[in-house]
Length: 382
Image 1 (spheres, rainbow, N blue to C red):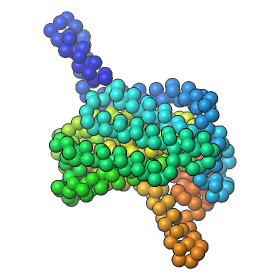
Image 2: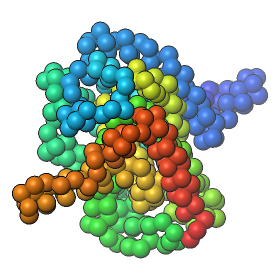
Image 3: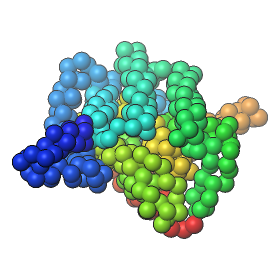
Image 4: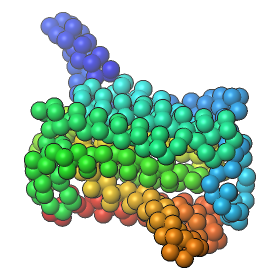
């Protein structure tokens, strides 16, 4: 909106005495300026909206008064402070701030619209799941079938839309992997569509599984978003993309503004979500943010870089799949289910081992930063 307003004012002032005075508005053509503005706007808006959102959620009694999955499996010694009654659905704040800020600072195109659409749809799914948990006062929200159906339908819609649109078809038909200059697959429509679906659905659920400790999911999300802030800027800049031999995607630079808005909104939310948390993002936030990261990675030909950058998310999701799969297999073979980890997802395993919650979160941040650096190294190691 600011981009269009600045452009309109300059056009109207052309040839008048106001032209020189309004020439400063040209700075809003630069993605770097608008990204900085988006990050600052989102941060300040989150800090202003946070206390009001928390008070509103408390008034509606949208608190976590049900037993979460970890508590149902056994007492966690490391949880000194009770989380009962802490407002959830704080992801509403992140989504509202992210969408408003992105609409304010981006130059709208198909990539921007698809990203914001996915955020809204997945936030709606997460809201339904959170609301079901609150009203039933148990950990049983939306069924896994409902979640996967909505996520897969959204991912298929996005994948097919990109595939059928001539300007974006290569985002699906060409498959790129890290450390290789050229696509490993070309003309691979169905394979690319499968990668697109797995990227969006997998990322959405992986972030959701990571959201179990104060500040863990949002902090790691901000770190991954920083990686894609850099990568989207490069992908959208023809000269930089050619120099680093990465795919150039016209219009991808506007995703840099969305990443900046996500970072600002995430840091603002972390202010209230750090230990001891005043609010939880819930599935409303985690499903939406995970899906957004997956889609952004897809839109710049880098879905496999997300696997590296989001290594913590991958480990969390893998721990759940390994735990569930091994338990079912051993119960089928021996009659008694066995576990790989003390608890799953992985962060609860370390809690049971005696780590304090703040230790788990800080150490996972460190691992996430390491993963982010490895992901950025793929820009040069080709």
